[in-house]
Length: 257
Image (cartoon, rainbow, N blue to C red; front, side):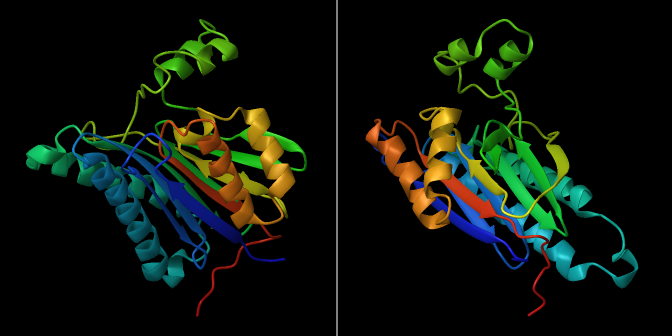
């Protein structure tokens, strides 16, 4: 197996009538992007869609225009960081110029594959997990008030799960004129399973439950994604919920045709 498998789903949930999440997968270029928008009057939908569009376009443009002289250079982390920063600028400018979009923003999580590397970028509290064998690991650290309290040892993990302010993010696209995304490379292994999700998933399901569902249904990525959303909705579905699942082969080679 020398390629990637991907599956994605986004759902409004049970409580909310509109969906401010957005997902995108590009199997050919090894790109997956998930965004969770925020803002009234459907402005969150505008922000998350802009995040997906700008990031996806910038990364594919980079791959298309990459010169032969750059072929041996690892430039993906640089361009992923640029893509996220461009999305921030685009959302910020629209929020300032359109009254109906004032104050809008979005979280984002991105997986960008090349060779045997996954480059993960994120802003906000949308997460990336990895299931390797039977071990589930969270690869991103939330940019949130609760995570800061956790990191300082001021609250426990159990208290964080039920904290009233657990959805307050400290970093998001479009809130300020610049943003500092976290971007990190990791070596992947054959049959790793990566999960990108909005907080609508992990706010309802514990990491233990997420791992259990991935282990049970992970051989069929489409089924696994659907079962995770179904499980959230069976527990009240209080928020939009989005999932992207990616299984890795030995190495990723971009398709040229």
